[in-house]
Length: 245
Image 1 (spheres, rainbow, N blue to C red):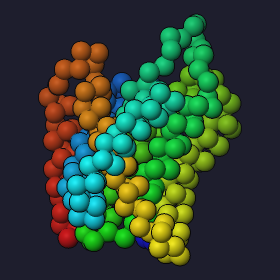
Image 2 (image 1 turned 180 degrees about the vertical axis):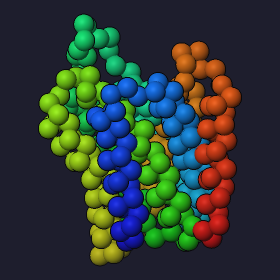
Image 3 (image 1 turned 90 degrees about the vertical axis):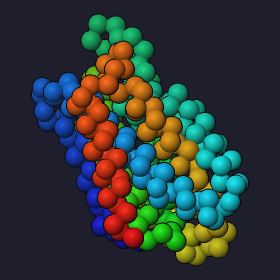
Image 4 (image 1 turned 90 degrees about the horizontal axis):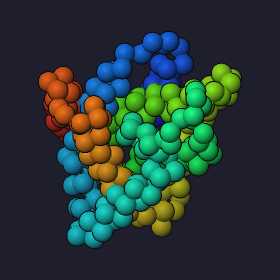
């Protein structure tokens, strides 16, 4: 287990969550372009590194698990209100308060975060897969944590509780990676299962990244020049991860 990857993911999550807590006036276009960039980057990493790995290990059966993971993410976003792709589906606000249940929201997002950490415990044949995946997850964590903390602030949580939620959420993915890696080392059954779980996570990544393409931006979902540039930058950087091979 490369601890530098886990520290990077933890720091990226903290960094994303700190933005709405500390910055009083956030530029409204920042989350849009950040989501576009990270969504394209995550999509590129998934297609170029993760999919070939699981198809090599599982053959055509990989497609079944990828599909299951896609629809598992559809279910999870009913709990998390779509925070994974930065487009929250919150009920209408009454006055200044959002009347939402915090527990299922955090549960859905935490399950997703735990799933993200599982592939980090897999021993990939492709040497470029693990560092590329870590970068993709870290990039995705920034807008994810930003959205989470923004919504938490709208529910008027005490500042101390906001920080506790952020720190605990930031630990979920690294802890899942450590757990998967350690159990995989000591159990052949767990180690063999990790590739199937990775296929499920791939399906979730495909759902999240493609949803970002359609939902991030204006209500009419048009593609501005800057949004196209953000997409292109993410894809180009995903291609550049091939140099890790």
